[in-house]
Amino acid sequence: MVEEKLMEFWENKRIEDEKRLKQYEDCENIKSKFLQNQIKEVKAVWHLDKKDIDFTLQPDKLNAELIADYILIESVKTDVLIKSLQNKDAYLKNKLFSDIWDEYNILHIIHCWLNNQPLIPPTIMFNKNLGECMAVDGKHRLNVAYHFGHEFLPIIIPKTNYDEVKKKLDL
Image 1 (tube, rainbow, N blue to C red):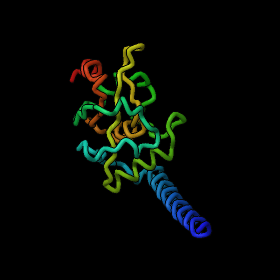
Image 2: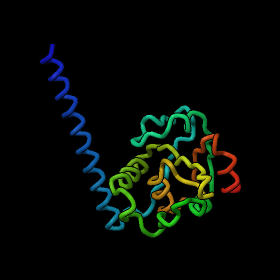
Image 3: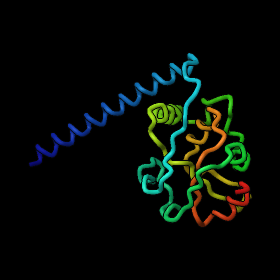
Image 4: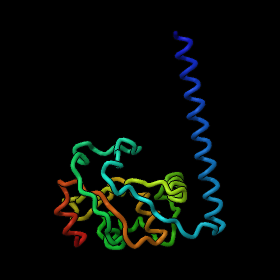
């Protein structure tokens, strides 16, 4: 019995390692194409139905209370959103890669969108201390969409922050 569990463990580990290696190779291929100017357009693909949004799949888990009840806004002007953010200077339309952003995350997002795989829209909250909005989830997705010139994008707003974010974004 113990031996079977060990064999199962190592087989699962091997499969996960192969999957990670494939993702890494895919990302390196995308980076190479991007640097050679072969990727000029990427169409953002978003989950727009609440039944398709599963926050537990996100690597950085949001507080369950914040996302238990939320509003999905399907179309917000990207420029208006960026200008409302606390760290607006981090979002550079002309520079996709920088020290601020995790390269693998950016490449993985591009890979998903090139393969028509929808991603969860960014989650936006209002920081009352600063009087500005914050992207608490989806910063890399927002950055990639902004870089590739998407004029509009969907966002998720926890209901507890909806009125403040709505006012800040003129929704």
